[in-house]
Image 1 (tube, rainbow, N blue to C red):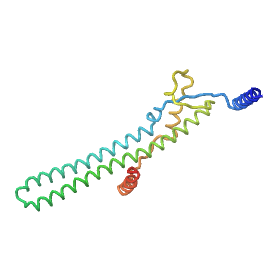
Image 2 (cartoon, rainbow, N blue to C red; image 1 turned 90 degrees about the vertical axis):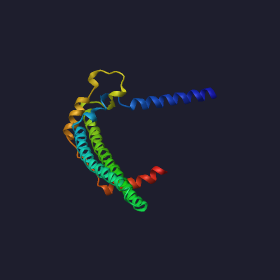
Image 3 (cartoon, rainbow, N blue to C red; image 1 turned 60 degrees about the vertical axis):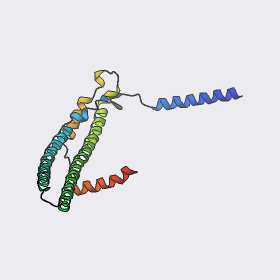
Length: 196
């Protein structure tokens, strides 16, 4: 009785799996390189904008660096002329300014990182849309990254078509650098989460 019940159960399971497998379409696979994102015109535009911003930040920081070096030199020269109390007060003012400059540098860094992150999301969404459109045009029903495939016929590679469509759909993307106030607010919100 047990044997008959088990056999019936296995036959039922096999027929359910067989029916389910028959309802799935045959896979028609297209492949695309992950590097398509990096090669896209929009991503290259992001790099150009970030390089511009980085140059601006470097100039700004060079100004602060000169200011701090001059102030430090002045403090060293005044060390012999000032009382201990006055020297301590000036040293504290100087250290406060150093901290302000470091905070400003951190904000500039965060402005760039957040701007790039948002812009990359826009490119990634456009990439997914382009990949889906090309997949449908090619008659495929599955799209996978080329880097996960060991070997395949070049006919499956839809990278050039996806890149072309991505460049047409999104030739560039504006990198938005948040204001200092917005970045400070966001960094302040992230601190308590990081400490959990």
